[in-house]
Each structure stands twice: as structure tokens, then as C-alpha cells.
Image (cartoon, rainbow, N blue to C red; front, side, top):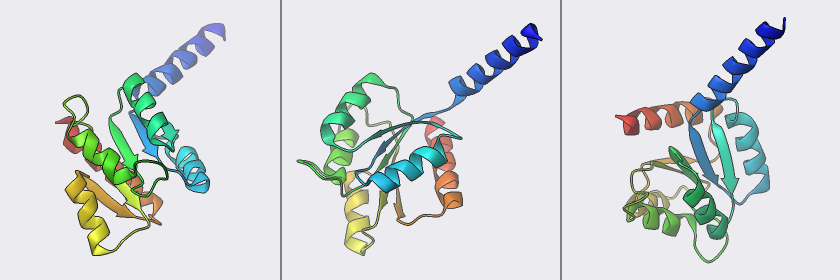
Length: 142
């Protein structure tokens, strides 16, 4: 029984190690909670809500993808952070999915102009969010 528990524990550790690491930049607490609870089944998730915590987490972790709300509060919004990332030699390779309730054509265009790789509007279905994350990770891992 002890050996079986050790094997199971090793297997769970391996699954955790295989999860892709994603950073969610979101200032709405309810959306943070939802994304954390929903996505942690499939990915390793960190959440931040300000530019300061964003840059701190980014410097400490090898993220495979960023989910960015374009309307975060603070000195810089999500569009500015996206633009800075895509113009950085160190981080320009990280795909960014913009997730926003702002869905005017100009909002979508501004997100793509800033460097977003994908734009999704809130609310987004669980299936579409998972499929988009999976497809974006596959596309950028080639």
C-alpha cells in the first residue's frame, strides 16, 4: 500500500509538472475567482491585477500564455502592457489572449494593434475559452 501511494503521489506530481503555466491579468475579483477555479483543472494559474504585480510575476515565472483584460485599473491598462510585452525581446514570444467586455470594433482593433494574438469578448463560454487557450498554446509551441 505504501508503494502504491508513492507511485500515485509521483504520478500526481508529474501531472502538475506537465501543466502549462498561464498568467491571468484581471482586476475584477469575480472574474479572477472564476478563471482560477475553472482553469486550474487544466493549467497552472497565477493571477495579478496591477502592472506592478504583473511585472513581478512575469520576471519570476516562465509563462506559456497570458490572458489579459484590456481595462485593468492603474497607471497602465492591458493594452499598454500588451504593447510593452510584444516590443520586449525577453517576452515578445509569449502569446496574449485579450479578454474584454469592451467589444466595439475599435476596442478589438486596438487590442490587435497593441500585439494581442487573440481577442475574446466577455462573457466567454468555458468551451471557447479552453479551445482558444489550447489552440494558441499549440500554435506558439511549434
